Image 1 (cartoon, rainbow, N blue to C red):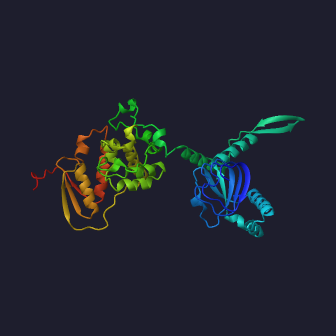
Image 2 (spheres, rainbow, N blue to C red):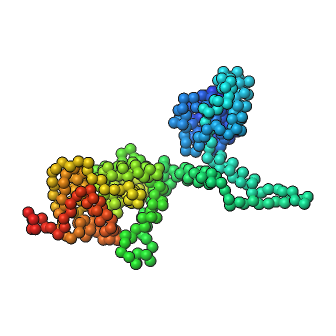
Image 3 (tube, rainbow, N blue to C red):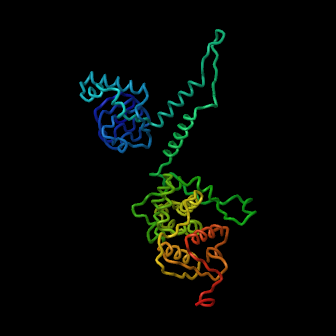
Length: 392
């Protein structure tokens, strides 16, 4: 049934790549299948007897939907094919299924391509929209474009559209197909009226899956090596998770190596992008934007909360200076259970983050949001204290 374009076939088993690039017809499989079943399948329907429950793991789900055999017309059609198959081949398998039919129908899986579903749906709508009605002895064409639809139809269509859009994005060849999009500025008329950050982070997030698709998942990812990110961020991993809309796991991967992604995602010079292999002959992946989007999304969803350590060691540690290094050290020491006090000679916590980087690049609200989280976790901050002068 490979490349089937209209034939009706019934077999008792199939090897790898069954129904590959199938465009029409029908295939009934009465036994086990090999791997990569239905790869590139855009038309026709396959009915597979899932003997041991392993079929889903062997099926390529990129272009098809797996459904139970429930519709009466499907059950009747499969039965008729089994009867014909048994009549012409004396198949013992078909005979056994027919003896207890329709009970075996519960084990069948209907493999239905999304493109075929879409074509059938469009055809039904076309037929329904134009009806020929006899009126006063003459035929009148009535266009029935109803805006009222069942909720089940709306849900189904939305799901289909999402799967179609996801299918269009090509992760394998994304680095060839898609161009790099840098973070655009907010409209000038808005920036003139405030001192907020200049970048339009909302616009960046709209095209984030396309940018994540540009990651090549290199065998040796220099972006996260000593040639790239000093923190060792697991960049290819969370790029792939963002592409697949798994934001929570992307956050977990990011926080394994980075205490403050909301800072580095805004002001880091991004040596990871300089080390990106794609950068050899194309603009590199927008790693910094993806990192910033992950943590900003996490804050919006309420996933970032103060987490005090489960136990305390009783040891006290003083951290002198509340710049990025001091804050990171305090954060790690507090997670280890130590009692941490941070001393800062200025009147606000943050050091370079607070006083050195302009607000247009790093909002001070972002800095103080993190400071408050750390304070809620048990870290003590003391300002206006110059260690060595005020205390020794």
